[in-house]
Length: 161
Image 1 (cartoon, helix red, strand yellow):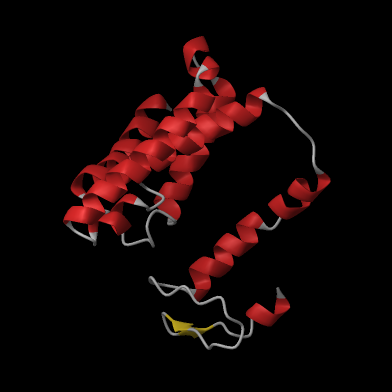
Image 2: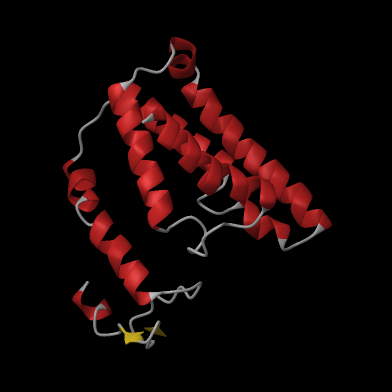
């Protein structure tokens, strides 16, 4: 599993960050390869324990990842404005590292919330709705607009949310 996770991280997280171009045109890291990569990261964290130094400093690591993302985005945006967009996608290495560190931080600080649990049941259906309704980079969640993406009209789905 480590080998497969390493290959997926290289092709779908590290290479889009370094090359600034994704291998898949999937709305900035929201496609099926990144969903599978995130699932395997979760399975890895479930089955293998992370080193103590990783768990002790995960809160600081989140702050460092966010600060680096802002700093690099600011510097890249001052040089070339289009570069900022490339650094703020979900398949950026700093975003994935920050998400894993944030997950580890929340694992150390457990809490229970019925609202969070209820809202979590809607994540996968909303993901599917987003993939069905917006085939490209069109993000139109306004119920009054008509979305025709990939030949499928999905405006009838929005009022049912």
